[in-house]
Length: 188
Image (cartoon, rainbow, N blue to C red):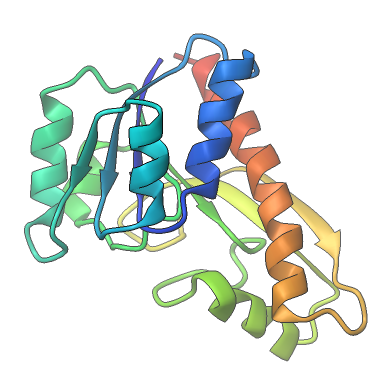
């Protein structure tokens, strides 16, 4: 299975996928390309593994530019791994069922436009939630509204901070992202 990974940040989930491929935890999976929508550390992680990397400018043509790049390759699955740009409805329709995202909450709670990173964790704490977690879902034109593939939770402890939740969620994200990719690869 050839995958394209879209990134915007530090690339911890990209690194997890790289490590899972190297260890054999992800079988029959190859990272075909990495696409970033801003200069970020994930690019360095990809270049360290000699992966093909593209840095595209954010803006109204971003989805079209990504689609052009991907249509020139044999891509089976797009993985949004900390990718912050919103993709166009046409792009999402073109890649229906072939694009997944990892989100740092138990969707449908705390999803949607503007809900990413520390903002999600602060919202969880502000709402007094007793649990949080992460979700891998298919991407649709509705932000964080696609079918859930897998999610996992943990209890929010009294006194937890945004940083505590970030650390707990990161561990879960790295586990369920690999599980989701493996699950999808078995259906292709």
